[in-house]
Image 1 (tube, each protein chain N blue to C red):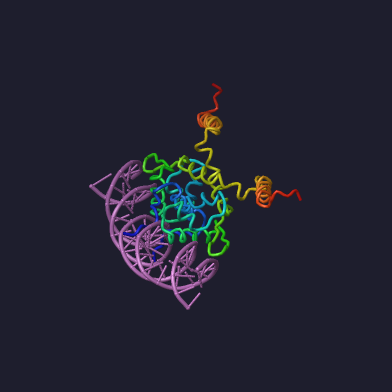
Image 2: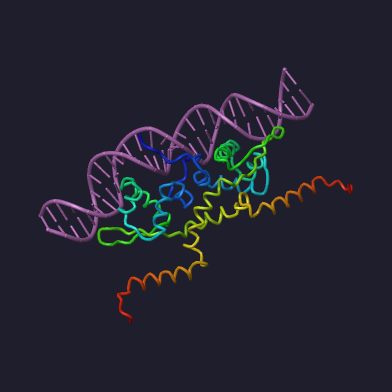
Length: 120
Length: 120
DNA sequence: TTGACACATGCCTATATGGGAATATGATAT
DNA sequence: ATATCATATTCCCATATAGGCATGTGTCAA
């Protein structure tokens, strides 16, 4: 009764963990594209692209529109918002913008710990 | 010779696809913690926490320090930067901040398409 | 109708889990 | 030395892929 890794269709986090799917989204960011264009630009087999698109569709990251025999895929970035919101908080851990503030806070913390009441 | 999903230790994208690991990072964001504190706060089995910590360590998202019989884990957010950088670009697809600009661009595009040279 | 084109789906395999249970490792206290 | 506490590792299982290949489905042209 073991559990495996969560499905790629569980949420955007799992969906975009796959590099190929991020590439697809990057390509769609410039505008609608039919599957074949994605196949050409990615240089991978068509069924594979279709499968990745299915995953992206199931988490709502892309939408489709029928146009003749082609299917035009378009980006829908909204499901990425939870990722952005979550990761944004951690920006302070690498950005130089926060370095000064962090060092000040660290100093305050040290001062507090070392403060034994004496005024020296 | 089939390929499976990339290892969770491949990069931060795969590592944080697991909700439990995001929880761990969230807890460590407040400061160093020993494994047992994480076990208590997460309410999951200790071996499971240790395994998640291993994954996080392998992608560099946490560091460890030995303190007696405890192992103090600390956050290192830097590996999250690629995620932030990638997802940041898509903010325009959901944020209201960009809605006006986008609608202007859409109008321009339509105008261009519909422009047949007549001035009506 | 027949054929070509654009996609989607089904089947198969090797791989990588997340979690449970038991056990191993390491440090501290007695 | 021994018991105990704190973590890590190992073995196991069911599940979920990503990719390759073959095939099904739907649309348009001749």
